Length: 87
Image (spheres, rainbow, N blue to C red):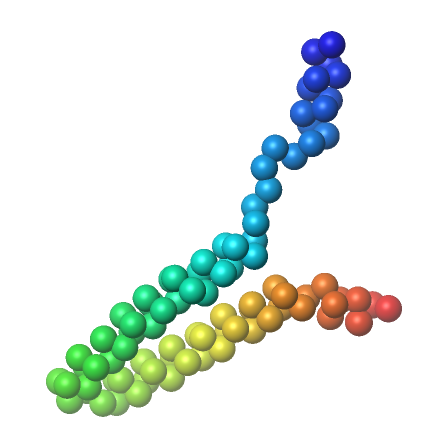
């Protein structure tokens, strides 16, 4: 009896992570806050006359966002790309 109960528990996952909701939460709640913080930092630096540092930081932030967008695209379309390559 105990063995069959343990086998049933092992066969059925107790919890799953809803990745769509996690990604949606990050995209709608976390990313805008981080972008707002970056904007405040850039504006404060520009007000002090550090335009070259602002341009450098802006370029780095844009490249970082491009990498994040690419990772998100691979997360969403990765399986279909693998199927395309290996079939």
